[in-house]
Length: 206
Image (cartoon, rainbow, N blue to C red):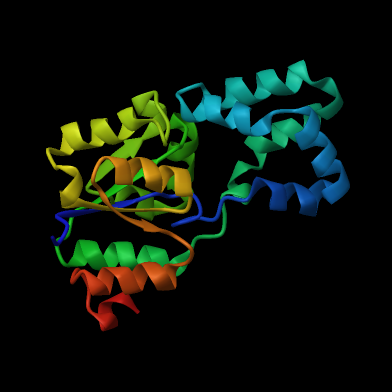
């Protein structure tokens, strides 16, 4: 069945998200490994993605961990450097789908304030037909509730949707609800899939 809407993850699908790479470049790999071993930075980010205030959550963690205070604050103060660069081919695919009238949705683990900030740098984030942002939804992938909310809000069943995400557990959760899925390993493979299911031509997907 040809999908009625295409659902995009954002991090590592439309925008690279590699905090470890950023810290390796700024403080060196050895110090980065030590910091990540001592501080649950991904847990901190999860709290933001579940609706915690971007600045307050990160600065509170920094104050609670004085040995790494300055480095943790970088997660906020230099956040846009972690959320970069854009994956240009993926953005072209999203715009090509929109240009053909195919609805495109986001389904992303993203904070409220950080998403708004990202959109000032990446205007295409305001071009989705519907945004499903975990910070507003108060739940993150791969919790089944986030997929259920998208279905309920859009009025579409799982078989009506095709979803791409770079994390296997997020894809598995969508599979369990009957969604059509594509594990994102690069824009080339995603382009091929969109051509195979008849949503884009090869020229449109280039």
